[in-house]
Length: 228
Image (tube, rainbow, N blue to C red; front, top):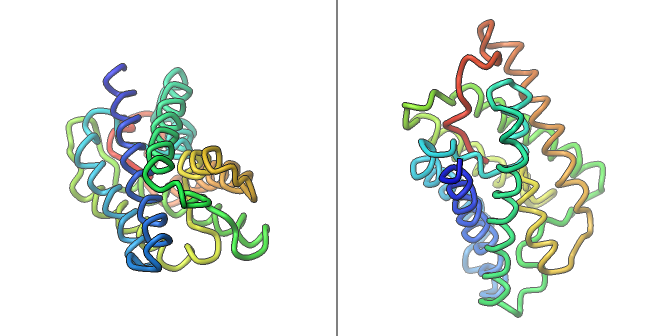
């Protein structure tokens, strides 16, 4: 378990450091990274983490995904809180490092709704539902490295960031939103990014059960290849 928790800490650190780091660098350089670059950064870092730690911890690197796997009965209840704590700690450490490197950044890549609160809330639910639906459909057992899973999950994250990022931020990850908000002190709309992803993953589990074969979410498989 210790190795799994360390892997989740490091994986989430890398996700937040690279993803929100791309947002911060785009801001301080006047748009050198671009919106497309930010979206691709999130997708690529998730893909890389799946290949790196997927066979150790499952590469959830997202509290909502961990809760989603629990709802799908692919993850034991006793591991949910330790996983979520490790993910949040890794994200917080990444934001602290970014604050040290870029003290001029006001928000450190925090997710702040550009549209209405309801608009962002619904978008985050649907985006996370789609993510969880894909993860449950492509995730495999503990002995599989999951090449297909890495490509599919990384692609859907980049896709969602590309089209929905300008409106809601496309966080789909409570830890990714909580950490920069805590370090930067910008809490506007934070509740959206804590509540909506959890509701979304639950919806994704329901969707998977509607279309997959009987028993796909019955604990027959281990939540071992996945990500946010």
